[in-house]
Length: 269
Image (cartoon, rainbow, N blue to C red; front, side):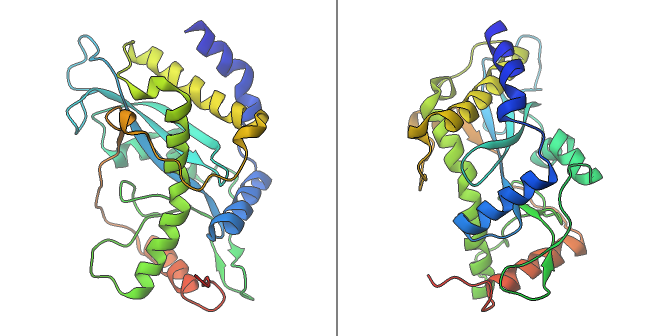
């Protein structure tokens, strides 16, 4: 564990710094250029890391897949780098609870994460939209967090929005795939105390960013990197959730939907 702590202490500030306003704008610019989703702060997802049942822990770490786990919640940029991570939530925790109680969720709710103000959408003269993250149905709809429209019988405009969101969100799935391929500890049940598992996961995330920064062979654009099948049983998705959204959050999603279906925001393919 000393090695993991030393890696984190020495590299965290370099490869996982606290985002600044200018850093957020740069991330959003990359998402717009590479993934056709403007004003995007990152792709959000979480994974359950399977662990050996901790002694005397009751059901704290027992998750919906009937395994014991700790959760990694991660926000990823357009180049498959971790922007911010939260490690150590109990496997039994609900997904809304994991996000709401994470450092990222709290700072976003409090408005203390140096997120830029509303910005004009590309190709428009005056249509402004807030900066948002993109996630799947495991996360609540917020003014700063977009999730897909639910249901199967959606009209074409909503399907377009869901496709554009899914395309940007896929970056975080690919990042977990890269992580699993690089660090084999993700592919098996981790036999260690939960507090030590937290240090391990944090260390491999830091190393992931370090490798992508300095190893030129890892820099080319990644189209699709999925979690290996050997790791699927160890890196489990967060379950889907419903929930009521505020009018403001629904209005932001409608704004992006209308933009993606407009002449200014549509794509030719």
